[in-house]
Image (cartoon, rainbow over all chains, first blue to last red; front, side, top):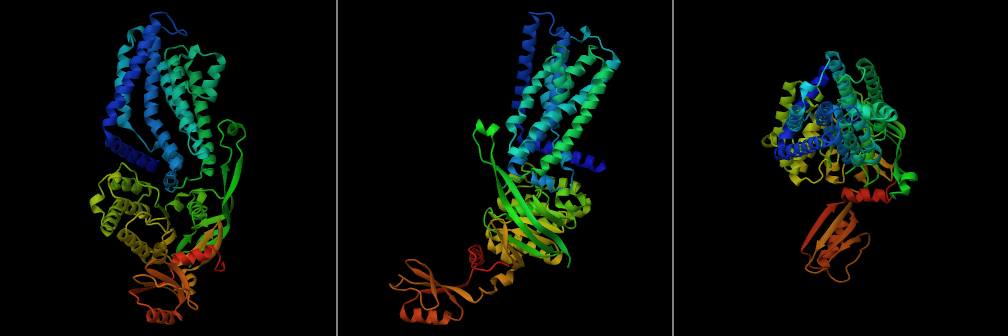
Length: 264
Length: 325
């Protein structure tokens, strides 16, 4: 454990040095994320000026769901997306050799080698603050236990969303490149703005079990708002998380056997 | 000395997709099997320096990758330092190093020192020892001035030397080198060869090298394994390979204009002919006679005498002029 923490600490420092190497990029990214958020808020304002409720969510509840969704998106994307991107690139170019040759557990290393704290703060803080100040908090009622269950589900959801994105990168071991396949994860992240109660029963099962991407925001948001049962949903999220950690480990071992190590 | 590497009947096949049609390839992919390495066996003793030679696509890099645990063998058994490389045991990985001339192992945007810092943590090298080793190696390679420069800003030669330092920072027992001097200038190549020979002789590091540069092989290795089309065609000491050729010479005569009618004389064969020079391949026994005949009959500007280059010897091997061992 101490060994892994030391590696993570060094990776955090190295990532910071990487991120600050191309500083001009930071401003472009900031503009991009703020633009996306403003368009999303504009859409919700137009929507709720015409309807009172959407899938049982009034405007304040919907804004809260968007808050959770974007918080989940930016923290998860910041922590793991770049790691997945680099994994695909390294498999494609054969640079993955230099990870496998090192005496460090490969799955651990490819998951935690990149900690873009600067990017995460740059992209998430302004956006989250914009949404935070757009939410009418006084119109929402919260129960402490629901918040606690919701946070637990949010953490499980974060692991699961990463698991889905990670599994979508692994075809690179067979096909040499999985950039297009893994971009499906980006498209799926748009589901974070749809309330859980809006899905049909079949879609709920699909997106909480087979492709568990709605646990992060929709399920945790629903539990925090008191619309779903916290303990049951938390247990479900935990079981699915354990199952997916197991699946990732098995598929990873199988993928390594198929690694062909691209030559120059 | 004990065997540090044992390969028995190692084969590696790759599945290559043949139907690349966007539509039909989805439902009927069709593959063909390419045998990169076919039933190779050999062993390496501790402290040996072995060159693994072969033309492009012969399977030498595939073998090195299997020895380092990067590729899973289709068939056969591989033991390196008593371990199955593909198990990627931490104790095993701490004892090997890999340098690939055509791939960068160190991070492009970081300085070498920052990358070495990560390696120090990964290999659990005591900080003081690591600093001392970085100091020694950067002094030896004259790299102290680029230690704190991002890798993208250093020259190719400096980068390759830094890659080498990264690969040996943990003092590996076996160092695998795949084209380590590719693209380097003569001085850098020379420094790297001297250094490799030095760690092999003084630290007992086992070296496994692949290179298309025969100077690398001659200066660094004692033993040669040659493979072609995935099969081993030669395995012996470098001296044994060159022994028969030591009696042969390549002699080039330079003229203002090569005299007309100059051709093969007795046992001396014309190898190359141009407007102002002619090159013969002959035995050392017939050499004096050849020189005498030509210099007596014609006005020669200069004479150049060489041993048969290793490239030509290896070429003979590929064309099977030399019996496989």
